[in-house]
Length: 323
Image (tube, rainbow, N blue to C red; front, top):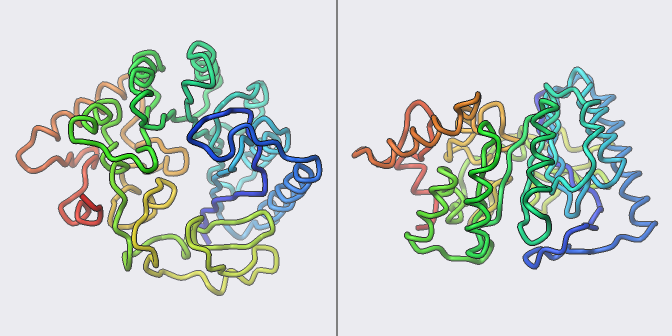
């Protein structure tokens, strides 16, 4: 079985103090940290023993995982398992990076978020350059708040040429067309994030080939649907894996709507779904080629879709988002 797992343990502490995050500067107790470490160890052991599956993993901690040794150890050990196709983690990249060299970098990858108020840009860029030097696959993103726009433009000009810079629409923020165009100029895929996707009744890979796993082993179809499918550790979840439509009215988070079939994002991000790297974003001239194709698509009379990059939704795909 090919199975993609989004793992989120009890960790909630973070070393950053972002005003838009409920976990800013939150501190976990020793007992909470021990519980998170034990939960991750149990999950890692389950993956190691599940050799009949081909597993892909995205760690989506509420807090910052890589400042904790057990997340770094998990990235290293899981990346070396022959039946693990991909292991990626969402991170602010504030940790030391010497351990990355111990990963199998054909398997390990990083979903990195830049928080302009929390780290000097030179420090952040140095971390990115180190990932590049080590040969790691990673994307970088920002939250699309108005005050972040100049920082995002600066970052765009200074990141390595082959690093994709994505933008998440800020939660609760409505963008005028002019505002959206400024973010679209930075991330040609911003239109996927701008509006929630109308998902009720739409086919989705979650609950079939994609699942969410909590620290206690509870398996759900995704982070946003509470109904459990069973438990990872007693195997009860397997009997409930099957294709099914989304039960929610809208899906407005990338780690959710990327799995909606009608978005076509598995084609856009082929080979890089978990680390959020578009398939076309490869090589030294990747950014130039990617943006040129996006610009050409946006000028086309056909309504903005590049067959070579599949950057833009079809008419039926566009209809799944509220406009």
